[in-house]
Image (tube, rainbow, N blue to C red; front, top):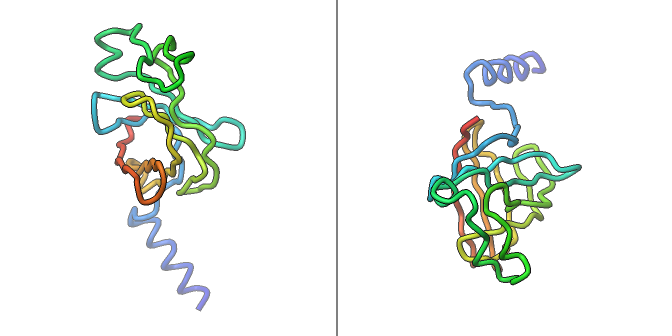
Length: 138
């Protein structure tokens, strides 16, 4: 019985259906040419906006839609937009997602779907949520 389970696990690994649960790296967002770098920040995950079509056009572009007027002078380049996600190895919860397109901050979850795809979900209040799939760049 144990031998059969070990063989099944080995075949799963060899077949490629299992993947390393490492969400850190550079991810492409589905719109505006966005690229977000996800990293470990202490015991949690965080992410910063590395580039986008807007940043490529104007590297000094500011966070003008931020709901907090005091934050509107920040540049979008390297702006932290994911923070305080905990859990793992394939799902992180309890985090916040900042969206520079509307200046809002939302409750979020990150779920690693495969080695090269994740699902980011941001909610005002459930069920008022938006979900995006991001693709790993490196």
